Image (tube, rainbow, N blue to C red; front, side):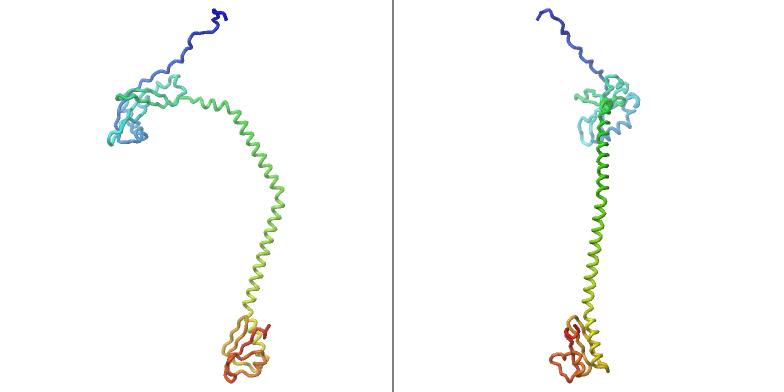
Length: 261
């Protein structure tokens, strides 16, 4: 390669200009709070007294230096708000500035209310693509909804049949429960039925009537306590004198299950 080929520019590239420096006025404050939010509120209310400039024309930041007993020592940095209008700060939400306060280097960060965030522009550049993605998702959701509606329409007859079958089964179960309850009630009423049967037999065997002191009836037998000795008519009705009783004395006549079966 020829030694005199100077097609490449060997001059050093120009460095980006350094951002302008901010003129920061500092003060040291002792406040009875450790909360940065409360400390900022106190400074904001007293900014007219703490700043040599009008409060509307200034921006401030507060940095904690140390803790002394019940007080907290803060470094207060104040700048002119117009200094933040420099084009170098147009995209910075927070503008940093270092300053020496009581022998320590403090980094202040001032809020730039007039800054324009370039993230919005970057987001807008992707807006068409995001819109297409959203439309695609909406189309997929709509297609899924339509398929669900079609499936529901096909399934409606089956669902109705299943509901009718479930209702029929419920009615059958209710009828079976009612029938079991009726049978149980009939079983409970069987003692009364036997008593009526025995009363009819006694009326047929003794047309003149029988004096009874007490009558007990259950599902197994009917027992009648007489007020006078039992006669042969009562025995003909199917009753038996209770075992061990004296036939010449009033006793208990028992009508077993087989009498009225």
